Amino acid sequence: MKYDAIVVGGGPAGSAVAILLAEHGHSVLLLDKAAFPRAKICGEYLSPEAARILDRLGVLKTVDAAGAVPLRGMRLTAPDGTVLEGRYPTEGPYRGYRDHALAIQRLHLDQILLDRAKALPVDVRERHRVVDLLLEGDRVAGVRASGPEGGAFDVRSPLVVGADGRQTLVARRLGLMEAHPLRRMALIAYVEGLGDFGDCGEIYVDPPDYAILNPVAPGAVSLSLVVPLEHAAPYSGKLDAFFHARLKQLDHLWPRISAMRPLGPVMALGPLAYRVAPPRHAEVLLVGDAAGFYDPFTGEGIFAALRSAELAAEVAHGALRRGDCSRALLAPYWRARREAFRDKERVTRFLQVVIGRRWLANLVAHRLARRPDLLSLLMGVIGDFVPPRALLSPRLFLGRQRS
Image (cartoon, rainbow, N blue to C red):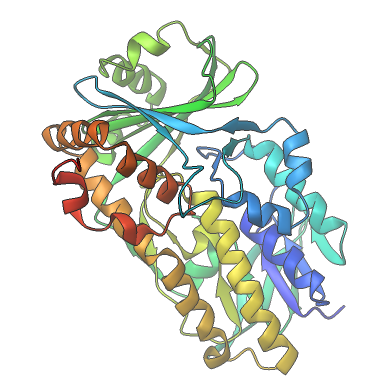
């Protein structure tokens, strides 16, 4: 069978782009090496604006019904113990699609999105691993894959979409992966016994580390600890011991979690940050983590995956309709993606400077405690519905409080 597009990877980005292309009338083959449902290492936070795209994909009500936990803000604790209660703004010039974020396990979210793709004219094949790209000169003509019974087969199409995450074969095969100077590792575990969270997640900043608690289900919490990669690397064979020893060093976090009970093993991911250059080949796009990743502090991962899929599907639809998926006709996607995420990446880089320096983290926390208007704007930026340019000037944080 001939397909208009082949999507490599069935996570949020891959399922989303497949859904949107199918709704435009295009035939899509979606390949994923896993059998769903499957767990995925992730902070499992969906910003308020992510709800808009989930609604467009036709799955928001299903996500709600699956037990997604509403989060109306984040409780941030600075190194000196200063606590900030950051709420997503519900008044003023900026409003999110919803007034709350969501926390849901990827085990459930990814299955919901994949089931939505299966309900459309999308040929979804689980347990199918893409082992190579079919390259013809300066274009990607298709993929070589193997099924659950073994044996490789080739599939060709006018467009290949790499949505295969941080271990992306598509970007690696095209030589697009680049190292990033920010070298961090995330250690993640599900725990119980932490009591009530109200309607907030929690962040603890204790340089050089920070930790995030997200209640993802009744009684279950996703606990993420982000540390410098070089600190964790010597303990690669005993990460569980390193994880618990490191947690005990976070003065304000440990009293909060000392009674926790593990619900599963400690999972590790690192290095977190990496860059991916735009393809030099025609007939290929990259979405989600396959297009690069920075750091999880602002929880942008799932929203970025969904938004990049939305942008890619719009450009790909126009190119497929014209029968021309050349670099020139796919280039608007890369420009749109850069424009969509550039300013948030700048804010995130600034926050990385802040959370990496104890004195600066305390100073900013004190300023924000006296400037609830700025704290509200920051939460809106993290929630993906306040323009990041509202926070790009450090003077906004370090200047005097308005009377």
